[in-house]
Length: 175
Image 1 (spheres, rainbow, N blue to C red):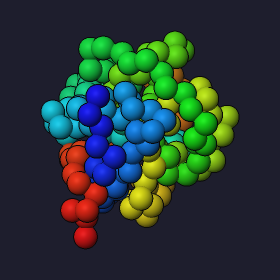
Image 2 (image 1 turned 45 degrees about the horizontal axis):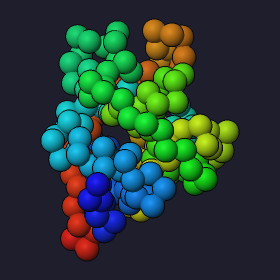
Image 3 (image 1 turned 90 degrees about the vertical axis):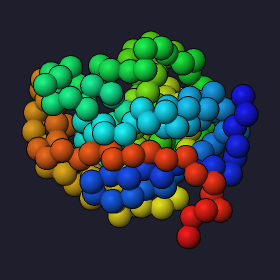
Image 4 (image 1 turned 180 degrees about the vertical axis):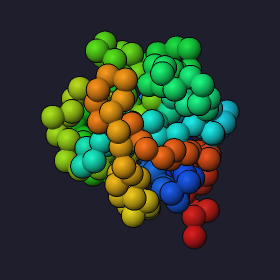
């Protein structure tokens, strides 16, 4: 794969902008998959459908583009799964990692960004980058009021936190 280490992701949300630097050294296929989906516009118009204060915000489900599919949010993906790339990078505040089901190799497009220390996820989820800008935006999203989801988990945002776009740009293009 031709992963360019000097590229970053600019995640534009209804709460502001976050910038992610990638860890191609420890998760090259995961980084390439995320970049590929972003360049296709896959994430544009989705939302953060799962928010757990002091833990994480989760997005990347294409079903979240359609409010009528809300009962299935959290189950969507790109139509394929990628192999896990567990690595020693710690899950701490600002780290972006792939969401998955019970099977280790079940990640596709959904990702989460840690709101705090989540070291219990280390070596079980593929961490593939970290926020280099937008900690305030991450915090604002993390403070979104939530209600009970279908499963009963208190993680369903009371207001939509939209992902307007995810753009892959050269790091040096950031001002």
